[in-house]
Length: 455
Image 1 (cartoon, rainbow, N blue to C red):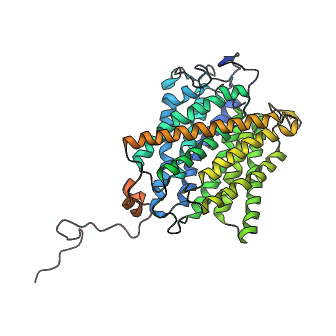
Image 2: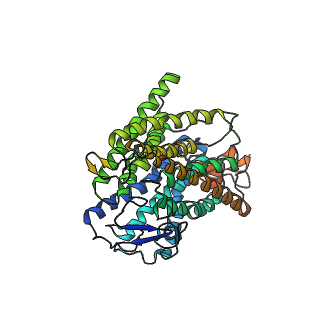
C-alpha cells in the first residue's frame, strides 16, 4: 500500500518500522515503474502549459517557469535531503533520519527502503521524487503574476523540505497518520490538500494582483490549457497506477479509475455549466478533468470502478461551487489551486473512507473497508488526517513565506506587474511582434539605420 500498503512486509509499532525480508526484484515491475516515473515527471511540464494558458500573455513565461524550475530545484533538494527525511525507515513517527542524505545507501538493489519493493531502490526514490516536484509546482498557481522569481525559488525549495517531506513521512513513511490507518493511495493528502492549502496561504500573504477586481483578467491561450489538461491526464496514469509500485491487479484498478473518475467529473461539470449559463467552456472542461483526477487520487487503488464514477461525479460539485464563490470574493487565488486541489483533495480523502473496500471486481486487492462496506470509523480517520494536513501545511507555509520575506522581497513592484513578469523577471517575452525591437544608441540614432544625410 502507498502508506502502509504491504501489510505482510511492514510491521508498524509505536514510532518504528520493522522490515520483513525483501522480495526478489521483478523485471515486469521495474519496467512499469520506469514508465510510470517518466509519466509523473511529464506532469510538471504539463502543468506549466495548463497554468501558462490561464494567465495574461505578459506573464505566460514566468508562470510556466515556476513549474519548470521545480524540476531542478525541488528535484535536487529531494535527492540531497528530502527523500531521506520523508521516506527513510529510521527516525520517528514525525520525521525520518538522514541515512539516505545525498543518496547514500540508495542502490540498484531493492533493499533499505521503508517498504518491501520489487524494483531498484534508486528507481523508487526517483518515482517518489516526481511527486514532490509537481506538488511544489502546484502551489505556484495561487501566486502567479506577482511573486518575485528569486523569492519563489527560495520558498519552493524550502517548502519541499519543510512542508512536503514531513507530511509524506506521516502518511507514506510509517509515520503517525499511517499508524492511525489514514489511507492515501497516491497523494490526496500529501499532494493535493497540501498544495491547495499552501497556495491559499500564499495568496493571502502576498495579497491581490494590482489589476485584480479592477479589470477582467482572462486566459490568454485556452488551447494551452486544453493541452496541459490532456498531458496531465496522460501523466496521471503513472501517478496513480504507478503508486501500486508494480505491474499488478492493484495497478490495473488504479489505472481504470484514473480514466473513469475524471470522465464523470467532466460530465457533471458540463451539465452544471449548461444549467447555469447555457454554455460549456473549454476552460471548464479542462478544469473538470483535473478536479476528477484530484478526487480519485487518494482512492485510486482502494475503490471499484463504479465507485470511481460516483466519486468523480460527486467531487465535481464542491470544487465547482468553491470556484464560483472565489470569483465573487476578494481572494486572489489566481488559478484556483485551493478550490481545485485543496477542496478536491479533501473531498477525495473523505470519500475514500466512504467507498473503500477490500474486495474489488471479485479479487481481494484492497486493504480496508470504508463506510459502505461496514466500517464507518474510516471516515473519521480520513477526516482527522485532512485536518492535520490542513493545519500543518497552513502554519509552515506562513512561517516560510515570512522567513523568505526577511531575506528577499516577496512581491514584485506595481510597475513590474504592469510591465509583465516575463520581461521584469526573466528578460524575455513569450510573444513578440515583428523581428525584434530597435536598439537605440546613446546618441539617439537607431542601430542598423543610416544617420540622416547632412545638408
